[in-house]
Image (cartoon, rainbow over all chains, first blue to last red; front, side, top):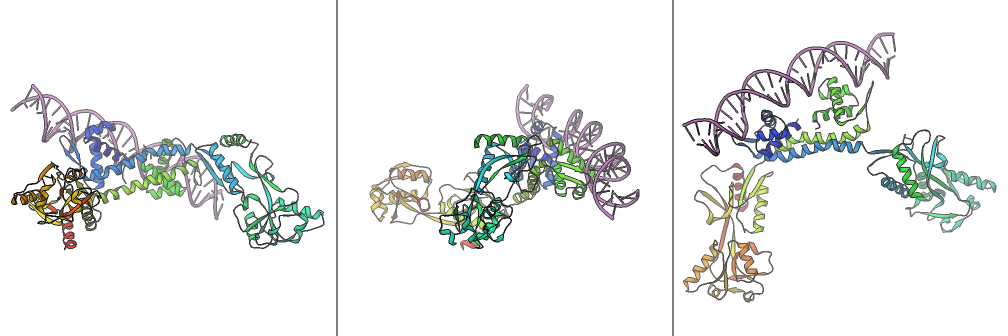
Length: 279
Length: 279
DNA sequence: GAATATGATAGGCTTTACCTATGACAGCAT
DNA sequence: ATGCTGTCATAGGTAAAGCCTATCATATTC
């Protein structure tokens, strides 16, 4: 394995054409450099310089080696700085709940990027430990603070070839006529069911799915209709949104972070920035 | 300055998550590796692993360092091979005379490239020492062999707006009516002058220039007309070539190389290739 | 609770890297 | 000619670096 020390010696000799001068430059004695050069030549299996009594002259092999050596040595000398730059970056680990509006999430990330330059951002699964969670207000833990960011309205989604796709709006009680897909963890669906129950009506529940994207797949597959947050279906031409002629249903999304301990400085900076820009 | 040895230790530890196992992989004892890691951590000014009794766990800093370390170590390990590949390449230094046909020169270089892959080719000035010279047969030295490659016919060049540009051909004796630019080192011009002298005619010499490209500049500038080898004026729309109704004038171009010493193996290979392809 | 596995530490040995002093030799000035 | 100077190579000695074995402290496993 090549030794960076020998390469640095080589570079000095190559540039000075003089072992004595190169030794001065390397802060070592001339015999040390002579020995180092001999060692390098033995490792590479061939002479690199022609020695004479008035200095040394680079051979072809030295001309070949020089650019390679310079490159390697420079990269090695840059390594600590690169490492420090990385290691000293501010870190933020953000847990993101699934099925958020792509567009709004991108907007938030842009703001984060502006708030803290050279940020070492890590987006992790919703369950993983993190400095901060991007989620619904209803999912805030006891010992957390909720910092609101945006709201997503639920809209009724139907396949574009569905009967309902013709209608401009729909009243709650009309929903009972249609097959409906339920999303158990979702508040809007529970609200709707409650709303209809008041009028002694019930939804015709044909399927359930854990996540919004699975619900969307079911709708697209023609199983029925369902409520979905508006951000999710922006770019889906095979779905149509119908205005819902009832109480507003929406979810509130924001950052949850622990209240019982001092907030990480990176997160504090971010929250300050978000307060300013969202105000 | 970072030490590649320590980086290799680090990489092994990072990949094994276990100092003892990494030591085995590096063919050193466990204490050597422990010491090496401590040394690296001191140089970088921070811990890299969290020690425990069931191995070590990489900290963030180690995750940052790892790709940098791998890159550097890999490049270092590749260096000797890269160097050998360069150093063992066949070398050929070719002195090229100026003002040759660009197209034909490119063709020759293509052939050279095919003849010897991984060739370390150096094109040098016509005067510089070289293994081989690309020049005219008339410029061959006493102790050289000439290997012919191609011939370039001289054509009469006139500016496209010149009176002569209308003619399809011209006889030697008609030349005396026009201003003529001379190129002293050029055989064609001497031949022409001699030819006209036989008929008691003489050229009206208005300018001289040492090189073909300077002659071309003078022609373009409207000083007069002149003979130029056909390869030189391929891509010059402001010049017109006139057929010369006299004896053929051309120059023969080829490789000159010493005859008195054994031919360099690289050159021998090249000449063998050229003999086959030009035959 | 013994066996096993891991990393840290201590002490000793070997090699390496470096230094000073000197030698050999070429170029240059006196 | 004869030193003088500048060059690289060599010899010999020293300090430090690198490595090893043995051992310790502690956690995990059976």
